[in-house]
Image 1 (tube, rainbow, N blue to C red):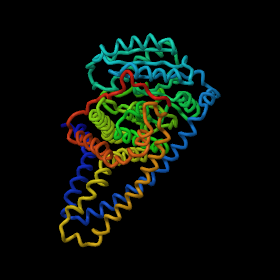
Image 2: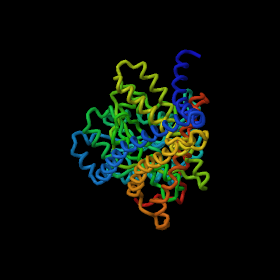
Image 3: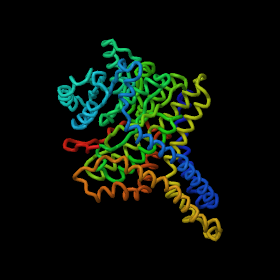
Image 4: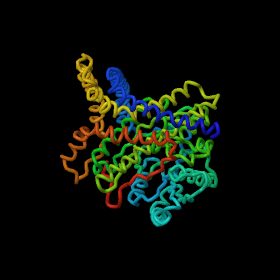
Length: 502
């Protein structure tokens, strides 16, 4: 093993090793040193309480900005800026086997956009390995939509190209190079082009592109920024199982918290960026799963830390996982969250790149490394320590310890700490009710009550099964060097399942 590979393996081991050290020591100390474990749990729960108290105001701030920004006429604001007429948008829509109703919903949302369609280029990108599924739908979509935008391209990503893995990253890399050729053929200025990399089920707010354009024309050095919207999973929310809804709402509020404090933030899911940056970094890496966050890091490395996220407090709505039966939907949810947790692959990439970049400020390096490592660690450990392992000392401790005052009082202390921490859950539940799409006619008022209130009873179970476990799974795979986690496509809606009115 050469030194470079050894260095990478060390960094790959660190996140999983921290998690498993915590779990194993918790088991051992619960029996052999129960008092140590009790003190650790008290400190850990206090840390989690302070963390909730710290992040909760940011969620509320983002919610207020969201409610304010969706009422603004961003197109009028963008038109008032110098250079508006020169800005074009490229929308990349990679697809594999999604149903045509999903493609139409996405494209219809683009047509409903307030932004001029004569300044939008849409790229629908299929995979050669799924050619038979892609080409008939692509022909229908081209016939229905090609004349409605300034440009409309379809691409077919070849299979088994060297240096690639199957996934969105390799496809959008291919799409990016093809659309660059088209942009140059048309004589457009790449410094005036904004590229949006969307999941194909993305339904955009009518003012989204206008808002991104306004920010692009008003912020300092717009090519050194990605543009991150609020990601909602509202397209088929009413038809989704309760654990899926809770997990998706949790993702949305995590992102809203990040938007209110974007220092150290990376991009997630559907978002936008300048074509200049994409050209400078040679588009997306082709051999990684977490392409949505990695493209931000590519910009961060290319500009030696001078790259950032600009929050866009407007929504893009996507599908929750749908697989027919309840059991299959939960299985699909687990795989989706494990894929998101595979973002841990960014840690060795960052650590190695930072070590070799002498121009990037040290504080920038420390900030991103700490946020990545701490975020992955708490993702994997908080649910099991709070809801499971934190109870072990009281179950396993020898009888001689049970008369100690700390043993008798700690359960009550922990109970009160968790009650205070649950304030964050109640606030999130209240705010989530304001983000729901309009109730479809086939959904009863009882189902509405379940969606808005009773589903949150499942939080502890969802927190463990669809929070900690997939995170531990991903970090353990990386730690053991068991190869790459493959890119799995989350199941979407099928024909006949239309999104509800918003």
